[in-house]
Length: 333
Ligand SMILES: NC(=O)c1ccc[n+]([C@@H]2O[C@H](COP(=O)([O-])OP(=O)(O)OC[C@H]3O[C@@H](n4cnc5c(N)ncnc54)[C@H](O)[C@@H]3O)[C@@H](O)[C@H]2O)c1
Image 1 (cartoon, rainbow, N blue to C red):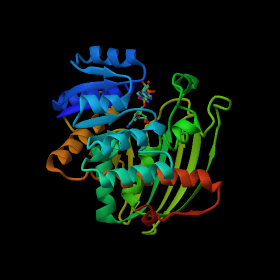
Image 2 (image 1 turned 45 degrees about the vertical axis):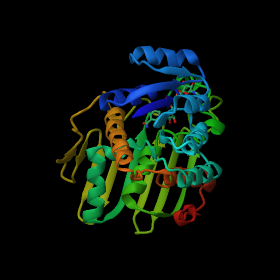
Image 3 (image 1 turned 90 degrees about the horizontal axis):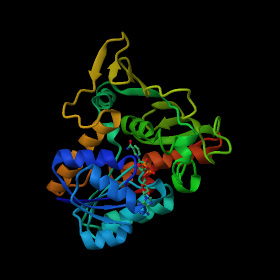
Image 4 (image 1 turned 90 degrees about the vertical axis):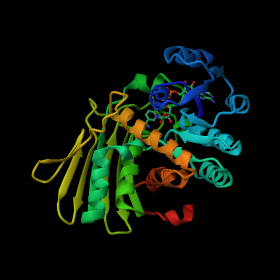
């Protein structure tokens, strides 16, 4: 498998770690900043070509697959270009940032012989797999979730795209909390309505989007989700997902799920961990599963339609201004 990667920034290293671990050969790297691509090439001891124009790379390097690790607003355009060339795509989240990009990408995916997968890697953690299976076996009544994180001014100003609605597509709900929003939808099924509010609590004048959001979602099944996310916290606190079923209450925090009596019922301990944390382990399992699907010629379950559900829900939150917005995912098909 000849693999290429676009966007040699922070998350690219996790992808390269995983690709090395899985034994795929990375033959081309692209970054608009050539030095960043060359540096990554050296750091990972890769014998690969470096490009600054991703379309030139796709045409010349002719990879079997490409990893898209660029800012949010470029995901759709780059993925479409690869799919049109019959190149498989593993794209970072969020899959895209608006309905127009979604329509273009969905059409390209339908027409292409190549496969596309989106990095919602937290679906692969045992804790989240446990909560999902409890929803199926015990019947879910609802979820409370919290993403209480800290992101300072430097985090936003060190790149030219974070903190900008035009390039990021939204603040904490579109970027950091999109994983937990995806998990909530994955566990509880089709939403029918959403409302909530967003605010900029600590970064006024620095970012032009929300650093804090609260969302309320009603589901077709009758289940409900309430959810709070912020990057204005004083420190990074582990994500909390509390699930109420017909039979009990379960809370996932850090690397464990606890039942109502405080006993752990699931632990994240998948063994072939290649990166130190929460992200890396999930990425390994997702990327491995993606390439297994590609090898079998099967569509990947977290595809464009599946991954857009969380984006669409975040966009409806932004449009709600506290009013109830009905959601109908069947119109996305
Ligand atoms: N799945 C996760 O948990 C996770 C974690 C972190 C980041 N991400 C996602 O990964 C993506 C990248 O985030 P990051 O933090 O690595 O960003 P970053 O700014 O550190 O890196 C992005 C890189 O893309 C390059 N780039 C931008 N436009 C380009 C273009 N047109 N052609 C070539 N190169 C281009 C930039 O020069 C930069 O090096 C984002 O979508 C982010 O949401 C996902």
